[in-house]
Length: 138
Image (cartoon, rainbow, N blue to C red):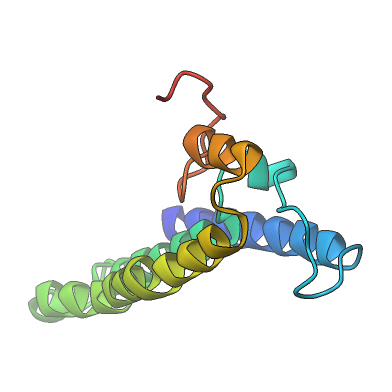
């Protein structure tokens, strides 16, 4: 049940973030945006859709591990199976942080970097984990 709850939470976050982004994109022509999305979940995280996807992967791994350790399951496979279950979310997390997220941040910096409002948004908004904006960061 925990894995399903985690997965469902991640799906709700990713779906909400994607819908907010889609609605925002419908009002701004591609490659002609003069601003960035900074409302809704995007006010709490610069990449809430990535965070939601991350949570989905970990929820799926928890579900898989629960199946391996359920009563009646062959316990001799559980440690190996649990280790295998976390490979996908670990790889996905690594790939997300060190390619997609970094490349998108660089692209946004190239487009909006140096603008005081964008620099403030970056300073006050978590890059990944949804967190209330903080005006106290230096």
